[in-house]
Length: 109
Image (cartoon, rainbow, N blue to C red; front, side):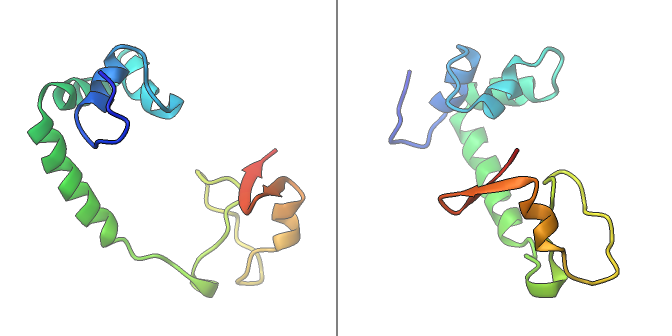
């Protein structure tokens, strides 16, 4: 079942059928032995459980303090904190030498 205009449990049913929209989400179900397989199964079978967890997650994300200006940093790799520089600011030239900017989106090369 596909319901592209509705937020519902069918997104997780599609993952079970190996018809996930995003590869990263498909991995939640398709990776052998992954802890997330049980979560996909639960949400595919129980829409109320999905919405309960969705609400909690949105509230939690809304409470994340976003760092701006000199408090934050542009990461060279999103899953690693940059090594500390003497200056409190990241050297933008170092980032742009390994990444490209297309349409305002940064993509690693």
